[in-house]
Length: 457
Length: 154
Image (cartoon, rainbow over the protein chains, first blue to last red):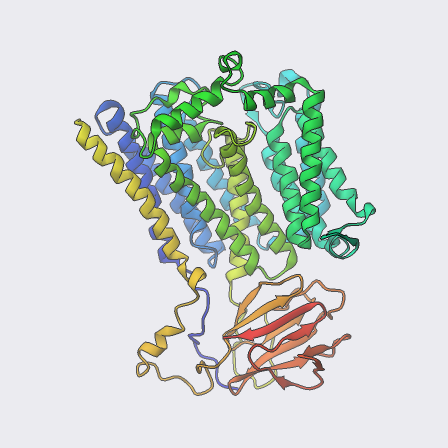
């Protein structure tokens, strides 16, 4: 055997320089957006630009340093991409705060971003190997169900905000446990499917052109389905219900490669949603507001927000009105659920497409990690986490553009809201951890030992 | 501030946003179009004096899983042997009831990769024949371990 020297064999590079450059670029774009808002609104560069810009820059530099120390082989793009959407979100909230719009508060959002970076770092430092999560499969499942169920059993005074019963309110402070539940449930789905994938993939018989599973294997799907429908009815939350069930079906598909699961899932959910729509008035109202938002009787009430969002995107057109020059404050709740149309008015279709591409790239990096992962649990977890992010963007963007019924989901990293920001930063930390493990080259032999090799870990 | 300046700022911002997206795609182009190391030595052959044992044109560079639960996984080949099995410290960790914890090993020797069965219960197969002693692996020939199929590619 030849001596082992620094072999220039094809190997994944760390790309730290590229990562730092992209990070700086993202922070610069955010500062540019900030300046542009000030120029558009008041003809001057806002005094806080340096504070906000340098604040964001310092936060991301800290995140970068933690990443470089604890996950040196991690994907170079995840952090800069997330920084950009998070920063644009803060700028839009600042812009709405200046409009002025009650409820929008950019300083709070920046503080939540700081906490998000802290959670990101903590997750990276504590979680040395993502396979440790596999041991927590059922614990995570239990935690997820509990978190999701708490608001449903709490009295409405403690858990209901604007018709959605998904909060825990403690005085001034309120959190949305469902955001953390979705992380725990993806871990549970991944662990469960790794253990059960063979029986789900192989048993069954063939009918026409699809492989039907056995009746008894439908159990877990039916339980998750019942759970999703219960969320829909008890918490009045179509978004989370669709998000979790869709993710489960996608992960089932990734694990088994059987199209029949996807068909069964879609049929079950569509059937359940239609039944719930007929039986419960609040679900029916949601569907009405979607189908007839522009009808005279709904325009002033349930469809108002949706229509204002559509008008905003329409007046933005291809190139947008320019930051600080539109009227996104006319949309109710433009800083949370409707931040996407608000951004669309000021940046136009061109800007929205760029933002959607940034989301697509984040998801692509996640799926790429899933492909490169070396054990089935990491594959499923990375696939599931990337899918849940993509699915969430689809549900909310589809909702505000009136493609599907509007649901109260947040736009990941952009909308105002602490729980979502923290949970999504943790999600990115887990993805970074897994991409580090997937891209790390196998351990190198330390000396020339002939045919006998010492395996080192 | 005049209309024109605002218009220019607006367009410049959108351009910067798109430039960011394009730069991001540029960073990952190696993912999309393969590593650049392949054409680089061809362009300046005189510069690098390579040891004879390594990186000739026909040498395999990647191990690709073409069948089984891990399908699509790619491991770049270095000088290090690759272990395959259910053990957590294997290079390629299988979760397969038909694989042993230390099932097989692939290692480079004199410019070719050799597969060796490590006393597995269900055996390792190179194409159709069972591997009974260390056997050289040609490019693109499937190695079957339980439900997993791997092969070497350039």
